[in-house]
Image (cartoon, rainbow, N blue to C red):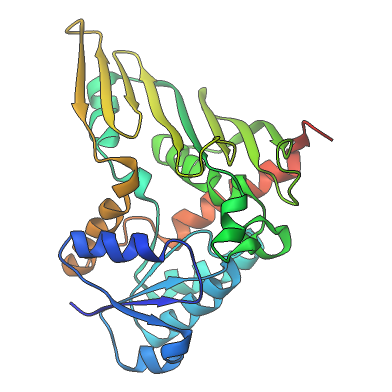
Length: 304
């Protein structure tokens, strides 16, 4: 399979090279300096991976869909729902394969925390707190914290993982109960921290994301779900399961957080080879972006 990475400047480039290599699909690494996207698409790769600013990816995905080339793309695609909606509709109409990076929807948590095993869900919690926003300037991508370019800060960039997880776990219309933003530590243009409370049909979702970990290579991660008979917690290293029926606690290893993009790579390749739908489509991504837009509309600043 010929897979090409087309990178206009993104800090996740090494992560993609590692992840696809780990699943037996080494990438042909391209960039703007190596030639334009149009010429790349004319070479008809099996899959093109697109990295760049949200608007770069919006434009490049459209070109790829129109050329009939399958796509894997980083998130967020576009800065908001209004920008993404026409592209999502085009991809849907054409039956295009567009796989949006959502590695936290593909881990062991989802095999265990099911209604069949645990009964109804009470609440789901997603927490991802990474190192400081100053990393992005050091990596040459200061636009990540520029609202006009990135469409927001931690909520847009990291919160989309949590919102997507909540949408995967529930069915129905999302209600936004609170959204609190902060830039207390670094006084950035966009928020460095966000705490959101959602609900669907009585199920509560708590999402906490930020750039406030005191070490730049640190991540404070949790994905947990509490059902009638099961409580399941993924901490980025292990999966802990409390089972009401057996009265036991089970702890099993999980793929380390730093390698989770391997799951995205593997799921994307499997779906492409099988001719099936993408693991997380532009339509799925649009649903999460719509919730995040609504969160921003309700947001209050804790340090205003």
